[in-house]
Amino acid sequence: YHPMQRPREMTRAITSAKMERMFAKPLVGNFGNGHQDAVYRTAICRKSLLPLLSGCADGQIKLWDLPTRTCVSTVNAHTQAVNGLVFGLDQDFYSCSQDGAVRRFSIPGVLSSSSADATVVDSSSSS
Image (cartoon, rainbow, N blue to C red; front, side, top):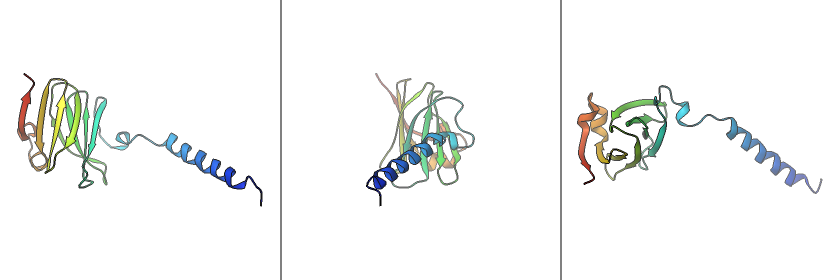
């Protein structure tokens, strides 16, 4: 038994964990056909793992299925960059953008509609 054995093993374990994180791909980069522009915001639902939202600089919001890493739906929500995404209490989410609009979307509406812009439940802009 060496008196420095435990601290040495701890240092090796921490270095190993840092190396794994350093060479890991970013989360959104692991998804197949992602955004064409920079991703500014992400949101995860606290009730289930299915919806992961990502909003990007061109105003698109994508709904992702985490286990399969596939894009379930794409919403052309805004004309400018998405600044905020948050899930509501029910099956809805809210987004805000640099264009001054705050919009509420229904997740079942986004999933069932071929025209995602028609799923806007409430749209208002600052006055």
